[in-house]
Image 1: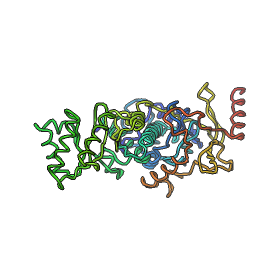
Image 2: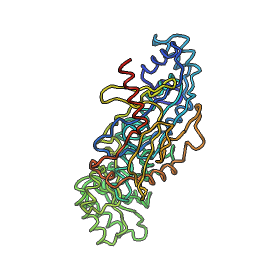
Image 3: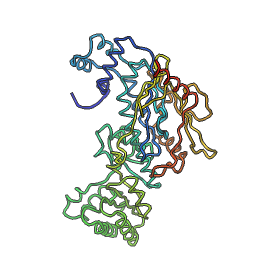
Image 4: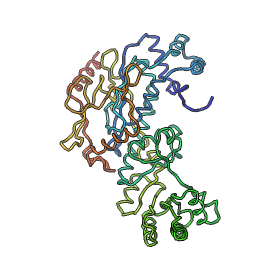
Length: 451
């Protein structure tokens, strides 16, 4: 068996206890409708907002979720599951409803990004996959949005796949980065799957494989005329000089777009390289920088006046190095038409199906969100939308990647300026609970504590 997650084995991409609970629900004939919320308990102090992502992966998964005979044989071999339960799994399909905040929307703590309404066994089984996909892709989109903002309109390209935590993570991250405004990725497979522009030129090994640095430049530029040449393999400024010499020698044949700096003092080197290129009349050559970059280093470089025209951002982007995880949760909030809630200290939940209403000032800038019951009619913008009914996605539930990107850019313009800061925002964005939902939570809490 090949060790890859695919449509035929993804049903087993779950924690064992999801299956043991599913069998318990089956044996107890507990089949009533449940509602589960997927939300972030609390934003990391380094994040003033998050960008919702991962919904498309969720809908794809729910539509095709099934157990193959191979999967059933494996479960049988564990000795934990009865024959009648395995027969039940043979016909298992997701038949529920899904409500979600659109991908690309800024989101905050406690608000449900996705609500699942389905028979309790179905809603329970999918917990692991949903948390895995939505948490990771939201984390990546949120990090990417900060990098794009720090770049101040300059291109910031995804170079992060080599050190991401697995192949699926790298593919889904490239998509998340694209919707928040990163124009290209080095990930060729992501380019094929999603239609994202791919980019890349050469590594230091190509230069090292040639005995002469300039001859390496010339050979590569002969094959790829509009390339960007990597100049820091040996002596960075000497590499720049060789590009200048090559430009003068080639004349009109010289179509190179720029140079790349990948190490050293990028501020000093970029300034000196810009001076040398300009003095040589090569004003049009761009300077592209890479090597250990993130939103903080990009912001620092540009504040110091670095004449850098684009950035390749890798390890710290692809691992979200400053915030490597989000405190996500997937919790039961209703069963059989009655609210359910958890009372654990610092992990208490809000009961019932919900709606999130967003409010704006007269300039169209976000000012607050209110989490309410699903049947409340408040005057803000409702964020949760139906995306799947009876196990089938709705016609408008899957916008194109370009449409999501355009929507995300529009949403980013509505964020308050202080939330776009790389530093923790003061004050934090306000998220309130409606009086009616709070009243229901209080009533249910008292009932649970006194029963």
